[in-house]
Amino acid sequence: MARIAGVNLPTNKRVIIALTYIHGIGAKTAVDIANKLNIDHTRRVNELSDAEILQIRETLDADHTVEGDLRRQTAMNIKRLMDLACYRGLRHRKGLPVRGQRTHTNARTRKGKAKPIAGKKK
Image 1 (tube, rainbow, N blue to C red):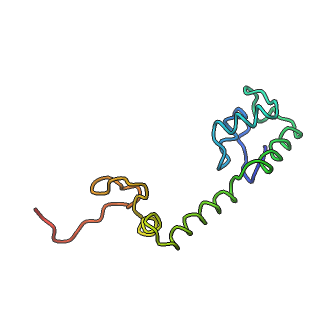
Image 2: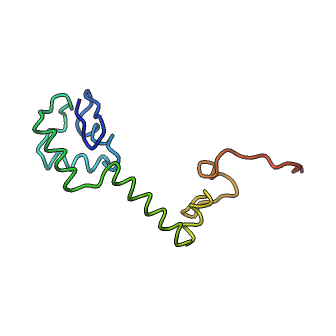
Image 3: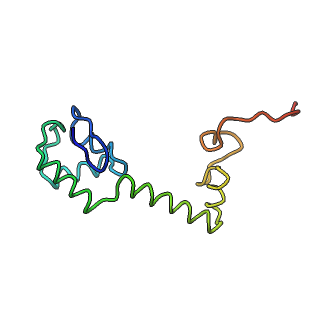
């Protein structure tokens, strides 16, 4: 089992698909890494040698922000907005959509389960 950036990669999947299990690595970045290291796109994780896994690990450390560092960076960015008390920070603080979506209906993902209002009838 290959362990890269604190994530156990699934052994029976193709390398490009398995790399996307790492937070901060998408499909394009995974393809770029495979091309840079001359890893065939059809190879599986269990077919990789220890040297190739080490190369992937070193490439990620050198060129990309992933997993814990990326999560920390994102949390700090949100905290900074909240401390500034700018519009986006206030929306984060209230748990409402940040990027201009409508809230009269929908927005249930951000707002949570609907709460009944006592005494409200038509």
